[in-house]
Image (cartoon, rainbow, N blue to C red; front, side):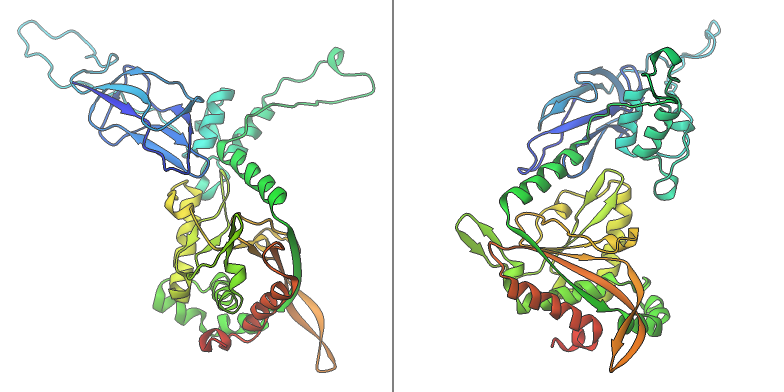
Length: 400
Protein backbone atom coordinates (compact mmCIF):
# COMPACT_ATOMS: atom_id res chain seq x y z
CA UNK A 1 0.00 0.00 0.00
CA UNK A 2 1.30 3.45 -0.89
CA UNK A 3 1.13 6.30 1.62
CA UNK A 4 1.51 9.95 0.72
CA UNK A 5 3.87 12.00 2.88
CA UNK A 6 2.93 15.67 2.96
CA UNK A 7 4.15 18.95 4.43
CA UNK A 8 2.85 19.28 8.01
CA UNK A 9 0.06 21.78 8.62
CA UNK A 10 1.75 25.12 9.27
CA UNK A 11 0.28 27.65 11.72
CA UNK A 12 -1.58 30.64 10.33
CA UNK A 13 1.36 32.91 11.18
CA UNK A 14 3.68 30.81 8.99
CA UNK A 15 2.84 31.11 5.30
CA UNK A 16 5.58 28.90 3.86
CA UNK A 17 8.62 26.83 4.74
CA UNK A 18 11.83 25.54 3.20
CA UNK A 19 12.79 21.90 2.77
CA UNK A 20 16.24 20.96 4.03
CA UNK A 21 18.07 17.85 2.79
CA UNK A 22 16.46 14.43 2.55
CA UNK A 23 17.86 11.90 5.00
CA UNK A 24 16.53 9.06 2.86
CA UNK A 25 16.57 8.54 -0.90
CA UNK A 26 14.18 6.64 -3.20
CA UNK A 27 14.65 2.90 -2.70
CA UNK A 28 15.73 3.25 0.94
CA UNK A 29 14.01 1.29 3.67
CA UNK A 30 12.54 3.39 6.48
CA UNK A 31 11.10 2.59 9.85
CA UNK A 32 8.04 4.06 11.46
CA UNK A 33 8.77 7.46 13.10
CA UNK A 34 12.19 7.68 11.40
CA UNK A 35 12.98 11.24 10.31
CA UNK A 36 12.82 11.65 6.53
CA UNK A 37 13.42 15.38 6.12
CA UNK A 38 13.41 18.63 8.10
CA UNK A 39 11.15 21.54 7.17
CA UNK A 40 12.50 24.94 8.19
CA UNK A 41 10.07 27.74 8.99
CA UNK A 42 10.96 31.24 10.10
CA UNK A 43 10.58 30.14 13.73
CA UNK A 44 11.27 26.43 14.16
CA UNK A 45 12.44 23.33 12.30
CA UNK A 46 9.74 20.69 11.87
CA UNK A 47 10.58 17.02 11.44
CA UNK A 48 8.70 14.96 8.85
CA UNK A 49 8.72 11.32 9.96
CA UNK A 50 7.72 8.07 8.29
CA UNK A 51 4.13 7.11 9.20
CA UNK A 52 4.92 3.37 8.85
CA UNK A 53 7.63 0.88 7.94
CA UNK A 54 8.28 0.59 4.23
CA UNK A 55 10.32 1.83 1.29
CA UNK A 56 10.58 5.42 0.09
CA UNK A 57 9.55 5.03 -3.54
CA UNK A 58 9.28 8.57 -4.89
CA UNK A 59 10.50 12.02 -3.82
CA UNK A 60 8.35 14.77 -5.35
CA UNK A 61 10.23 17.81 -4.00
CA UNK A 62 13.95 18.23 -3.55
CA UNK A 63 15.71 19.95 -0.66
CA UNK A 64 15.96 23.72 -0.79
CA UNK A 65 12.56 24.40 -2.35
CA UNK A 66 9.78 26.47 -0.76
CA UNK A 67 6.70 24.52 0.29
CA UNK A 68 3.28 25.16 1.82
CA UNK A 69 0.98 23.22 4.12
CA UNK A 70 -0.28 19.90 2.76
CA UNK A 71 1.91 19.74 -0.35
CA UNK A 72 3.00 16.25 -1.42
CA UNK A 73 6.61 15.51 -0.52
CA UNK A 74 7.08 11.80 -1.15
CA UNK A 75 5.43 8.40 -1.46
CA UNK A 76 6.03 5.48 0.88
CA UNK A 77 5.26 1.87 -0.09
CA UNK A 78 4.54 -0.19 3.00
CA UNK A 79 4.53 -3.49 1.07
CA UNK A 80 7.84 -3.10 -0.79
CA UNK A 81 11.39 -3.98 0.16
CA UNK A 82 14.45 -1.82 -0.38
CA UNK A 83 16.03 -2.03 -3.82
CA UNK A 84 19.45 -2.50 -2.22
CA UNK A 85 18.28 -5.23 0.13
CA UNK A 86 19.53 -8.56 -1.09
CA UNK A 87 21.05 -11.68 0.26
CA UNK A 88 24.78 -12.02 -0.22
CA UNK A 89 24.43 -15.24 -2.26
CA UNK A 90 21.67 -17.03 -4.14
CA UNK A 91 19.71 -19.47 -1.97
CA UNK A 92 20.50 -23.12 -2.32
CA UNK A 93 18.10 -25.25 -4.34
CA UNK A 94 15.32 -26.40 -2.15
CA UNK A 95 16.10 -23.89 0.55
CA UNK A 96 13.25 -21.95 2.05
CA UNK A 97 12.93 -18.45 0.55
CA UNK A 98 14.19 -15.51 2.59
CA UNK A 99 11.12 -13.68 3.91
CA UNK A 100 12.82 -10.99 5.96
CA UNK A 101 14.09 -8.01 3.99
CA UNK A 102 17.53 -6.74 4.86
CA UNK A 103 17.41 -3.19 6.18
CA UNK A 104 20.10 -0.93 4.78
CA UNK A 105 22.40 0.02 7.67
CA UNK A 106 22.72 3.69 8.49
CA UNK A 107 25.93 5.38 7.46
CA UNK A 108 28.45 5.75 10.24
CA UNK A 109 28.55 9.37 11.19
CA UNK A 110 30.27 11.52 13.76
CA UNK A 111 28.54 14.01 16.02
CA UNK A 112 24.99 14.98 15.04
CA UNK A 113 24.56 18.09 12.95
CA UNK A 114 21.96 20.84 13.19
CA UNK A 115 19.42 21.11 10.33
CA UNK A 116 21.04 24.33 9.11
CA UNK A 117 24.45 22.66 9.12
CA UNK A 118 23.14 19.65 7.22
CA UNK A 119 21.54 21.87 4.60
CA UNK A 120 24.70 23.90 4.06
CA UNK A 121 26.85 20.76 4.02
CA UNK A 122 24.68 19.25 1.29
CA UNK A 123 24.96 22.43 -0.78
CA UNK A 124 28.76 22.62 -0.38
CA UNK A 125 29.44 18.89 -0.62
CA UNK A 126 30.89 18.68 2.90
CA UNK A 127 30.72 15.43 4.87
CA UNK A 128 29.62 16.36 8.42
CA UNK A 129 30.84 13.00 9.71
CA UNK A 130 34.42 14.24 9.57
CA UNK A 131 33.79 17.55 11.34
CA UNK A 132 34.40 18.42 14.97
CA UNK A 133 31.30 20.12 16.32
CA UNK A 134 31.61 23.38 18.26
CA UNK A 135 27.92 23.52 19.24
CA UNK A 136 26.19 22.27 22.35
CA UNK A 137 27.38 18.77 23.33
CA UNK A 138 29.70 18.65 20.30
CA UNK A 139 26.90 19.21 17.80
CA UNK A 140 28.06 20.26 14.30
CA UNK A 141 26.67 23.71 13.54
CA UNK A 142 26.61 25.95 10.49
CA UNK A 143 29.84 27.73 11.46
CA UNK A 144 31.71 24.39 11.47
CA UNK A 145 30.61 23.71 7.90
CA UNK A 146 31.62 27.23 6.82
CA UNK A 147 35.07 26.73 8.35
CA UNK A 148 35.48 23.40 6.56
CA UNK A 149 34.41 24.98 3.26
CA UNK A 150 36.88 27.84 3.67
CA UNK A 151 39.75 25.44 4.42
CA UNK A 152 39.22 23.44 1.26
CA UNK A 153 38.93 26.56 -0.96
CA UNK A 154 41.46 26.29 -3.78
CA UNK A 155 44.50 28.47 -3.47
CA UNK A 156 44.50 31.53 -5.67
CA UNK A 157 47.14 31.33 -8.38
CA UNK A 158 49.59 34.14 -8.90
CA UNK A 159 48.08 34.97 -12.29
CA UNK A 160 44.61 35.43 -10.77
CA UNK A 161 45.68 37.71 -7.92
CA UNK A 162 45.01 41.37 -8.69
CA UNK A 163 48.01 43.64 -8.89
CA UNK A 164 49.15 44.86 -5.49
CA UNK A 165 47.62 41.98 -3.51
CA UNK A 166 49.18 38.87 -2.04
CA UNK A 167 47.89 35.76 -0.38
CA UNK A 168 44.49 34.08 -0.58
CA UNK A 169 41.30 36.12 -0.77
CA UNK A 170 38.56 33.47 -0.61
CA UNK A 171 34.89 34.33 -0.55
CA UNK A 172 31.69 32.36 -0.83
CA UNK A 173 28.01 33.05 -1.31
CA UNK A 174 25.68 31.22 1.08
CA UNK A 175 21.89 31.68 1.12
CA UNK A 176 20.46 33.04 4.36
CA UNK A 177 18.44 30.59 6.40
CA UNK A 178 14.73 31.23 6.63
CA UNK A 179 14.93 32.21 10.28
CA UNK A 180 17.77 34.66 9.56
CA UNK A 181 15.68 36.21 6.79
CA UNK A 182 12.76 36.54 9.19
CA UNK A 183 14.95 38.06 11.91
CA UNK A 184 16.23 40.61 9.40
CA UNK A 185 12.70 41.47 8.28
CA UNK A 186 11.44 41.95 11.83
CA UNK A 187 14.38 44.09 12.90
CA UNK A 188 14.03 46.38 9.90
CA UNK A 189 10.26 46.51 10.44
CA UNK A 190 10.74 47.48 14.09
CA UNK A 191 13.09 50.33 13.23
CA UNK A 192 10.86 51.53 10.40
CA UNK A 193 7.51 51.44 12.21
CA UNK A 194 8.36 52.23 15.85
CA UNK A 195 9.89 55.31 17.44
CA UNK A 196 12.59 53.44 19.34
CA UNK A 197 14.34 55.23 22.17
CA UNK A 198 16.72 53.75 24.76
CA UNK A 199 17.34 54.81 28.35
CA UNK A 200 20.12 53.49 30.58
CA UNK A 201 20.85 52.93 34.24
CA UNK A 202 23.24 50.95 36.37
CA UNK A 203 22.51 48.51 39.15
CA UNK A 204 24.63 47.34 42.05
CA UNK A 205 24.44 43.55 41.85
CA UNK A 206 26.06 42.98 45.27
CA UNK A 207 22.77 42.32 47.15
CA UNK A 208 21.64 39.74 44.56
CA UNK A 209 25.06 38.10 44.51
CA UNK A 210 25.14 37.91 48.32
CA UNK A 211 21.65 36.38 48.35
CA UNK A 212 22.64 33.80 45.72
CA UNK A 213 25.81 32.89 47.59
CA UNK A 214 23.87 32.45 50.84
CA UNK A 215 21.11 30.21 49.47
CA UNK A 216 22.67 28.67 46.35
CA UNK A 217 23.31 25.20 47.77
CA UNK A 218 19.99 24.98 49.61
CA UNK A 219 18.10 26.21 46.55
CA UNK A 220 19.72 23.67 44.24
CA UNK A 221 19.24 20.85 46.75
CA UNK A 222 15.56 21.70 47.21
CA UNK A 223 14.57 22.46 43.63
CA UNK A 224 17.16 20.58 41.56
CA UNK A 225 18.14 23.68 39.58
CA UNK A 226 20.80 26.38 40.01
CA UNK A 227 19.79 29.83 41.19
CA UNK A 228 20.82 32.21 38.42
CA UNK A 229 20.36 35.90 37.73
CA UNK A 230 17.53 35.60 35.20
CA UNK A 231 14.88 34.71 37.79
CA UNK A 232 15.65 37.93 39.69
CA UNK A 233 15.40 40.02 36.53
CA UNK A 234 12.17 38.35 35.42
CA UNK A 235 10.54 38.93 38.81
CA UNK A 236 11.84 42.50 38.98
CA UNK A 237 10.53 43.21 35.46
CA UNK A 238 7.10 41.78 36.29
CA UNK A 239 6.81 43.93 39.43
CA UNK A 240 7.84 47.01 37.44
CA UNK A 241 5.36 46.17 34.66
CA UNK A 242 2.56 46.03 37.22
CA UNK A 243 3.38 49.61 38.20
CA UNK A 244 3.80 50.84 34.61
CA UNK A 245 1.34 48.86 32.45
CA UNK A 246 2.10 50.86 29.29
CA UNK A 247 5.37 48.97 28.96
CA UNK A 248 3.36 45.74 28.92
CA UNK A 249 0.95 47.08 26.29
CA UNK A 250 1.06 47.17 22.49
CA UNK A 251 -0.25 49.34 19.66
CA UNK A 252 -2.84 47.97 17.22
CA UNK A 253 -3.63 50.61 14.62
CA UNK A 254 -5.01 53.55 16.54
CA UNK A 255 -5.77 51.46 19.64
CA UNK A 256 -3.68 50.57 22.68
CA UNK A 257 -4.03 47.00 23.93
CA UNK A 258 -3.38 46.59 27.65
CA UNK A 259 -2.45 43.04 28.59
CA UNK A 260 -3.66 41.78 31.96
CA UNK A 261 -0.99 39.07 32.01
CA UNK A 262 2.79 39.02 31.81
CA UNK A 263 4.26 36.80 29.09
CA UNK A 264 7.99 37.53 29.17
CA UNK A 265 10.12 36.62 26.17
CA UNK A 266 13.65 35.43 26.95
CA UNK A 267 16.15 35.86 24.11
CA UNK A 268 18.10 32.63 23.59
CA UNK A 269 20.95 32.00 21.18
CA UNK A 270 20.59 28.92 18.97
CA UNK A 271 22.51 27.45 16.00
CA UNK A 272 19.83 28.94 13.70
CA UNK A 273 19.97 32.42 15.23
CA UNK A 274 18.37 34.33 18.07
CA UNK A 275 15.01 32.98 19.22
CA UNK A 276 12.70 34.32 21.92
CA UNK A 277 10.67 31.65 23.73
CA UNK A 278 7.96 32.91 26.05
CA UNK A 279 7.58 32.52 29.82
CA UNK A 280 3.79 32.37 30.01
CA UNK A 281 2.14 33.99 33.05
CA UNK A 282 5.52 34.87 34.53
CA UNK A 283 3.84 36.58 37.48
CA UNK A 284 2.64 33.18 38.68
CA UNK A 285 6.02 31.44 38.47
CA UNK A 286 8.37 30.88 41.39
CA UNK A 287 12.12 31.50 41.16
CA UNK A 288 12.67 27.76 40.71
CA UNK A 289 10.05 27.48 37.97
CA UNK A 290 11.58 30.43 36.11
CA UNK A 291 15.10 28.96 36.29
CA UNK A 292 13.89 25.49 35.26
CA UNK A 293 11.92 26.79 32.28
CA UNK A 294 14.70 29.06 31.02
CA UNK A 295 17.23 26.22 31.32
CA UNK A 296 14.89 23.98 29.32
CA UNK A 297 14.51 26.71 26.68
CA UNK A 298 18.28 26.94 26.29
CA UNK A 299 18.78 23.19 25.90
CA UNK A 300 15.98 22.73 23.38
CA UNK A 301 16.96 25.86 21.44
CA UNK A 302 20.38 24.26 20.90
CA UNK A 303 18.68 21.17 19.49
CA UNK A 304 16.05 23.12 17.48
CA UNK A 305 13.28 21.52 19.54
CA UNK A 306 11.31 24.63 20.52
CA UNK A 307 7.72 24.64 19.31
CA UNK A 308 5.91 27.39 17.42
CA UNK A 309 3.60 27.93 20.39
CA UNK A 310 6.57 28.58 22.67
CA UNK A 311 7.92 31.22 20.27
CA UNK A 312 4.63 33.04 19.65
CA UNK A 313 3.24 36.02 21.54
CA UNK A 314 4.88 37.78 24.46
CA UNK A 315 4.18 41.15 26.05
CA UNK A 316 7.72 42.11 27.13
CA UNK A 317 11.22 40.80 26.40
CA UNK A 318 14.57 40.43 28.16
CA UNK A 319 17.88 39.91 26.38
CA UNK A 320 21.19 39.17 28.08
CA UNK A 321 24.20 40.25 26.06
CA UNK A 322 26.31 40.02 29.20
CA UNK A 323 26.86 36.30 28.74
CA UNK A 324 28.94 37.18 25.66
CA UNK A 325 30.82 39.97 27.46
CA UNK A 326 28.78 42.95 26.25
CA UNK A 327 29.23 46.05 28.38
CA UNK A 328 26.45 48.14 26.84
CA UNK A 329 24.02 47.88 23.93
CA UNK A 330 20.73 49.22 22.63
CA UNK A 331 18.32 46.29 22.14
CA UNK A 332 15.75 46.46 19.35
CA UNK A 333 12.06 45.98 20.05
CA UNK A 334 10.30 42.72 19.34
CA UNK A 335 7.07 43.96 17.63
CA UNK A 336 4.34 44.45 18.62
CA UNK A 337 5.83 44.73 22.12
CA UNK A 338 6.50 48.23 23.38
CA UNK A 339 9.66 47.58 25.43
CA UNK A 340 12.67 45.29 25.86
CA UNK A 341 15.19 45.13 28.71
CA UNK A 342 18.88 44.58 27.96
CA UNK A 343 21.18 43.00 30.56
CA UNK A 344 24.96 43.28 30.30
CA UNK A 345 28.23 42.14 31.78
CA UNK A 346 28.85 42.51 35.52
CA UNK A 347 32.08 44.43 36.14
CA UNK A 348 33.63 45.60 39.38
CA UNK A 349 33.69 49.40 39.34
CA UNK A 350 34.47 52.14 41.88
CA UNK A 351 31.30 53.80 43.16
CA UNK A 352 30.55 56.34 45.87
CA UNK A 353 28.59 55.13 48.92
CA UNK A 354 28.02 57.38 51.93
CA UNK A 355 30.97 59.56 51.03
CA UNK A 356 33.33 56.63 50.50
CA UNK A 357 34.68 55.13 47.26
CA UNK A 358 34.05 51.40 47.23
CA UNK A 359 34.28 48.62 44.66
CA UNK A 360 30.95 47.07 43.64
CA UNK A 361 29.82 44.62 40.93
CA UNK A 362 27.93 46.90 38.55
CA UNK A 363 25.72 46.00 35.59
CA UNK A 364 24.52 48.51 33.03
CA UNK A 365 20.85 48.12 32.09
CA UNK A 366 19.29 49.34 28.85
CA UNK A 367 15.58 49.76 28.21
CA UNK A 368 14.48 50.30 24.62
CA UNK A 369 10.87 51.39 24.24
CA UNK A 370 8.37 52.62 21.67
CA UNK A 371 8.15 56.37 22.20
CA UNK A 372 4.83 56.43 20.34
CA UNK A 373 3.26 54.77 23.36
CA UNK A 374 5.68 55.24 26.26
CA UNK A 375 6.95 58.62 27.41
CA UNK A 376 10.43 59.07 28.80
CA UNK A 377 9.11 59.60 32.30
CA UNK A 378 7.45 56.16 32.45
CA UNK A 379 10.46 54.48 30.86
CA UNK A 380 12.94 56.01 33.30
CA UNK A 381 10.75 55.26 36.31
CA UNK A 382 10.25 51.70 35.09
CA UNK A 383 14.00 51.15 34.88
CA UNK A 384 14.49 52.72 38.30
CA UNK A 385 11.87 50.33 39.72
CA UNK A 386 13.89 47.38 38.36
CA UNK A 387 17.09 48.87 39.82
CA UNK A 388 15.48 49.28 43.25
CA UNK A 389 14.12 45.73 43.24
CA UNK A 390 17.51 44.25 42.41
CA UNK A 391 19.42 46.39 44.91
CA UNK A 392 16.93 45.41 47.61
CA UNK A 393 15.67 41.91 46.70
CA UNK A 394 13.27 41.86 49.64
CA UNK A 395 11.05 44.09 47.51
CA UNK A 396 10.44 41.12 45.20
CA UNK A 397 8.92 39.18 48.10
CA UNK A 398 6.92 42.07 49.49
CA UNK A 399 5.78 43.51 46.15
CA UNK A 400 6.84 47.06 47.03
